[in-house]
Image 1: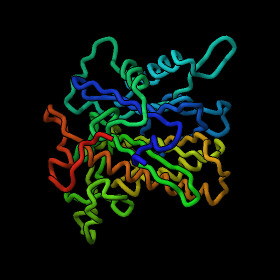
Image 2: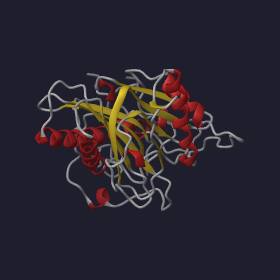
Image 3: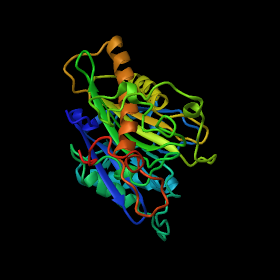
Image 4: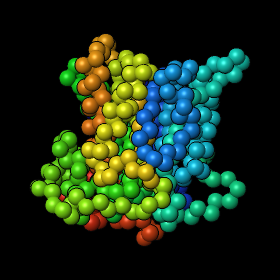
Length: 337
């Protein structure tokens, strides 16, 4: 177990970044088509091919899911992933044509000091292609992929991941880009809201930080514009239906509330994709479905804290400082998994 979403058999992740633009793309690539659905709880979502993931829609599975920076410009990234998958012979057969099914979601990272004067062609198609081309079982966290240019109210955001196993042996994993409007920590201190769910000091092992004070509970947000989002993917190996994956996505959204304050705000685009490889030998029942949804929320919360904990600062001096810059040597770690 690497404590990554790729602990789920059949799941790969690729990252690509543009240092000059201060943005990036992450792709979750499935070795075989995966049954998937979606839950959208934020007030300002940005999506490509999200509607086809609803349980009543015809398309039954997806080849990959993309998380991209760049705001609406980032919706080009799934096209690059499609191109790479087509080279690999992947996609839904439609008569003589093959069409890779690649939903995606985007984050706003256009105000982080990177050079967004990219001319006629934004870089996101190429970043999507690169991310898909490098997909594997290990990948960087923090300031990597979609996490490269992300921010929160007071700290650098980033890319996070976590995994777990249910009591009956089903795998659950999460990948998330953290660009929240508010805080992932308790006030100005180092303690994460997700601390009750931390495993093996994965984000410092500092504990919960004591009793909440008025200052800790005070709302702090970085702006009132729809310029923030936390977007993620949760994956399991349990053989669940599309409608059941919708329920997992809904339950997983609670991971935002466990780790961010506030969550699902009017200016957030909070989105969770949920997918299954269906490779587990055991057949899940309703109790298993419930536990998978619960653990998906906890994995997502842990991944959010890890994304911030592992982030490194941008060199441009515009983005907020990283957690490690502010809170120091609480625990070592390079962000490379």
